[in-house]
Image (cartoon, rainbow, N blue to C red):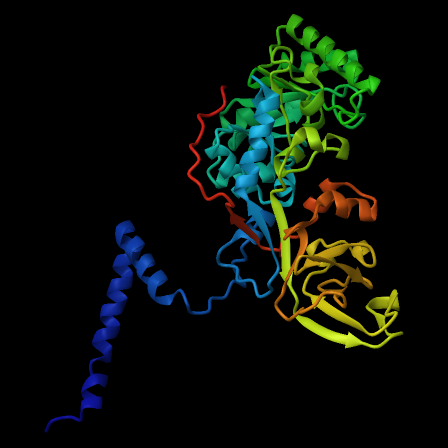
Length: 459
């Protein structure tokens, strides 16, 4: 007697289960089959929910903002313009002359995204990068950056990781030398480092002749540590006439001469940050000093407003969002926490989805402005963690979804990092580095032109 069709299919289940088990067994045994199986699973099961409770993934600040798997629900983003970056690099090269450029990408490239910034700079011939922390350097290595990576903040604890990833830390004590030597022996590699001099910053570095002698003595017991560079930092580089600039340069020269006389020959010597690059020629003469360390210049900001015309830079980052709510409030009604702003008349209020948790400073309330429909509108009331309010009464035709520029250009108007900094008594560096990880960075190229990649800067 013929079985109904449903029973015929059920009778095949044991055989199907056996085939499935055999397939899984073969996949586990064969690397090739395993890779195929992984591709099959990824293609057919990628949309199924997966628990990460037992395998949490740790990602960096930069990766969080750029990971394509992250889906962002707000209309808030920071655009990173590679064309502006290239322009700024061309200006840096015009001042650097024959000096090698150490591109400073610490602090997530000043809030711009260390990985995409470094990758574009590599395409433009840059072969040396500066970070503050070892983990920032590891992130660049994991992204495929192969040039020199200098850890400007020094070696803190995991010396093995520094040596294994071919990072070059600033060091300045005999203890640093001993630790690097041990790490080199454990890893079977040579450790490179730059000696940091404190010529006037009073922050970190060798500061006295006796300290320098002790450092040199420590090197005699560390054959696997190579001093590849000598560095210091100018404390007043944005002030051309400050007498301490020349004094710091002279102290550097004296320390360098002492090292050379002791048989230590650092290949790279650098003291010039953005300010010195723009106006202190003696700090990047191509002889005593053959490397420069531009940071803020890369991202379109001069170290002081007085230097802006000379620098001729373009802002790389712009910060945008959209209006998500509109309301009209009556005269006398107060806005936001603690009622720090009171409507003088019937007022049209726009709410935008950005707040101090995104790096939009709480002090911008009743102080900063945004751009809407090419016009300026004041931020009113206290900036909240996730939102803030804007008075749009005088802007005709405002509607939900209208673009709001927090930082950048809209029409003929522009809000700069320098302007925002002055509003709250800080510096552009803080404004840029404060843009939070949950603000996605969108990499754009305003020129979208095929610019030939330069050969790598001379080694």
